[in-house]
Image (cartoon, rainbow, N blue to C red; front, side):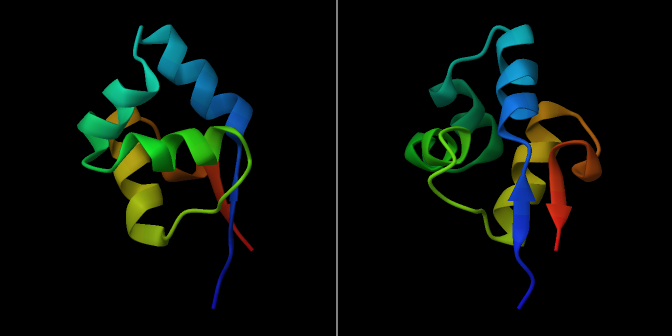
Length: 69
């Protein structure tokens, strides 16, 4: 199974630039805001489907904020 590394700094940077809260990003990505919070705090790694939803919500390329290792 592949692991996904998260560029937490970049996710937070993009989210704040858009003026979104963690809850806003969660809603736009269709996931619970607690998942976003855990990702931004480096306490969890997303499943591929969740990672794609976050990248899509932020309107960035997957590779800009995630890396499959």
